[in-house]
Image (cartoon, rainbow, N blue to C red; front, side, top):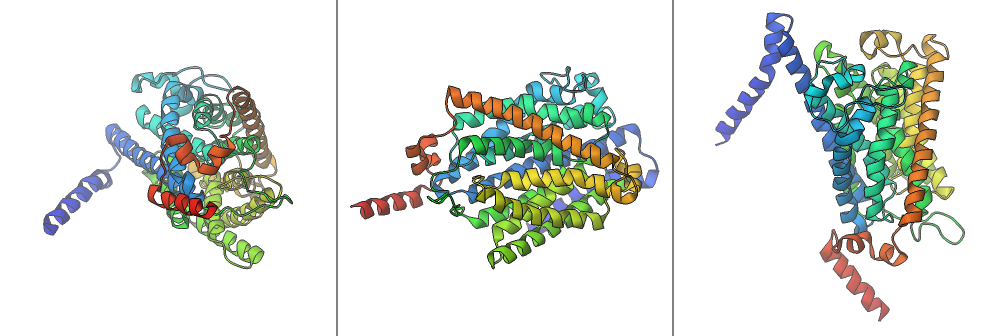
Length: 464
């Protein structure tokens, strides 16, 4: 049986590598083979980015208390479904359809490859089939929305996730995507954001911090003196696994944005992505050791994620040595800003704004410092050299403008939407519902029914 399984595996591997070996032997690829290779490469990248949702589910569920774990994990699937449908209906057209400098005006209610002409301005540069391009970009939109929902954890109504998720997927994320990747005004200025430090991460994090402010802190997060109280997540092993899954998925996020394996440029992107993540984790661990006197595992995990966020926009533009610097700064700075924001009264359960927002800003600005003109010419093809390559302040100025414009737009739109929702139905569950946990109050069952039953019985005996 084992021998048969081994033979089947070898046969599958042979079939997978045959097109590449045939290409190498016979010379230049035919148009059909080229399209097939590029499309298969991009579809694999889509699968990796899509699987990042499992990482978000594990990370967020492990970062909250047991009484909210099922709700938070299930919410990941809910927001994924919302992003998929809204991006299909309107988001893809608004983000990547032909249009003006602010949003697309064609390609709504996406109907497949026959609509290809509606997306020529933004996506016509690649021969990947339009259906796979849609799936790839949809997965990015879902990641951005997952960041938003993490900042609302443990006190937002389920209905708020649904309403805001729909509007975020239609009128916020696609607009920013169009600005940078869809031929909008930031694209016209040649803003460098290879895989989305600004478009995906800063956009999601900005909406998350607005929601966090309007929702106000969780019950018991701050004592009478206003000092933060540690509310540990219920399962640190889950959070570790979540980060490893996200790190793994990032190899679709960044290298996959090349949309082609030809020329091997995606290998450089994978290299800078990986070493930046490693540097960020170590930097955050050391920073926590110096701050707390002990090494903090959640801080290390957030350092890895922050570095991945920062290198996402810069991965194609910078050399490995610069990627390490970007990762080190992202990891250390994210730890420091998360502590400062918490002391300032912000209750962000997964540190979404520090990890995805602050690091996203740094990642966007870093290309204005470290962008190598040789890499721009070789594969990145956007913008000018950074300050440290005698490129002057031009690219740094473009990057700063893109960061500022994105932050202001997303913050204002998110505030308007969430404030209207607050006036209409309220953002937050009742105090009683928050105390009993959103698993039971929103869904009627706990993610850990046996353990929660034991806890409830113990509390009942204590009261008696």
